[in-house]
Amino acid sequence: MIKNGTHKKKILIIQTRPGIGDMCVFYPCIKEIGKKYHDYDLHILTKKRSCAKELLKNEKSIKKIIYLPKAKGLNFNYQIFKVFKKEKYRICFIMHYSLRYYLIAMLAKVNKIFSYGILKKNENIVKKSQIATRQWLNEKKILFDPIINFRTNNKINNQISIGIGGSGKNKKWEVEKYIKLIKMIIKKRKDVKILLAGGKNEIFDAKQIKQSLGINGKNIKTTCDLNIEHAIKSLSYSKLYIGNDTGFMHISGSMGLKTFGLFGDTPINYSSYNKKIVPITPNDKKNISHGSKMMSKIEPEFVFNKIKKYL
Image (tube, rainbow, N blue to C red; front, top):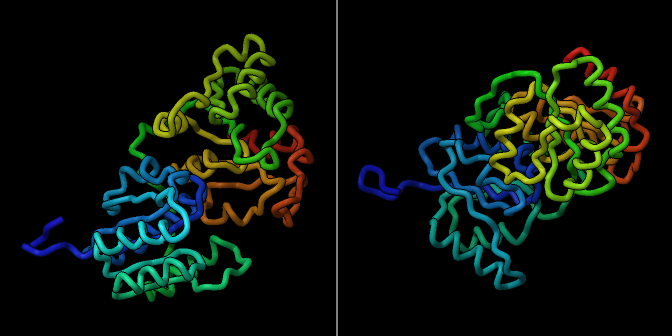
């Protein structure tokens, strides 16, 4: 890109955690870096599974999103180095612990390199990203904004999103419990519309839910056969999300929707970047962590009592 007769300066943010939810978690920090360096072109290097090109397609501050190559070992390093040399980045932010990317940035003669460091630590990823960003930007009072510009017609109506998807069985609530919850919701709100938010792996679950609801299941829609862009659009018509700790939960929160996430096997602090996301744990337990295996301990009646005033 040319500006005033010269090549515009560029900065790179490297965020390599793979999920959609991960990109939503780190985006408030990415947004602040973009604001600080508004006279630079901002690029992001990330994994394809983050769906960053779809999630952030309407964010004008981001000029390019580059997905990591499929190569491995030395060839992977070389491919990344070629990106650095081609783009001639002035500044690089590495949003994780890594020796590899730090050395590549040095070899590519990046002027300033900001990084978490080399030795990985067991930390709250939300707090760490925000603390690091404040230090890097020398701004102590940043108020991180989690809202992403999806440019959807966010007409708040009577649609409720039920998030049945998940990256693993350990993070998923049982289908039978979703059926019980949906029945309670329909009983309270006769005119409610239900959207089952899941992917291809949840097609069978969605079919089972619809069949179990009989006549009430005929008007239930799903995102299971939609690509991510169309799924986002469908979610935007909801007034509320209830479901697993998954990408759809983070997208809903990033739209500004009231969002209830079911946490029985992942730490609730993963949602702390966004006040719109309210974690529901078994009997309000606070010490849920990876491997807790307590999704089955969350009961439909307990969830319904948490959400009923928002229906």
